[in-house]
Length: 112
Image 1: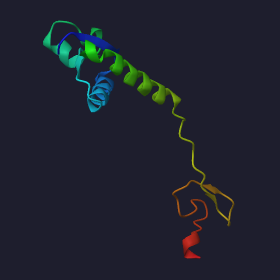
Image 2: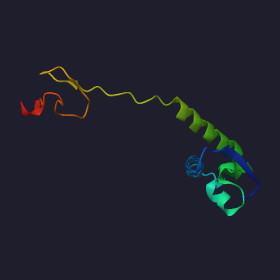
Image 3: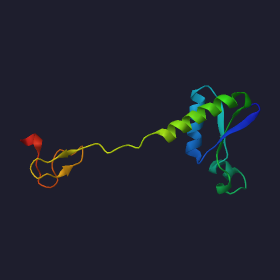
Image 4: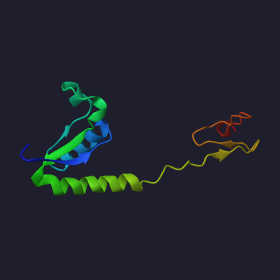
């Protein structure tokens, strides 16, 4: 890698690998430096070496833009809401979506 520059300090190696994969899919050569595996090669404790993503300096702007877009998408995702289920017509118990039989009275709408 010519003239490497750090573009991202990851929380863990999984996140660093995710970023590297995203950058590579967009034509940017990237690599992870640091983390537990790299710490094992030296004398630094694993906790002091966080994984960092590095790219060529010529790709720095594009890499930072992609990472920023990824971060915005990640923070703007709405939490998954609970899907509605159904109410047993026999006993009135609320049943979660995915269950076909009432857990309380064993009413089975498919059997009727």
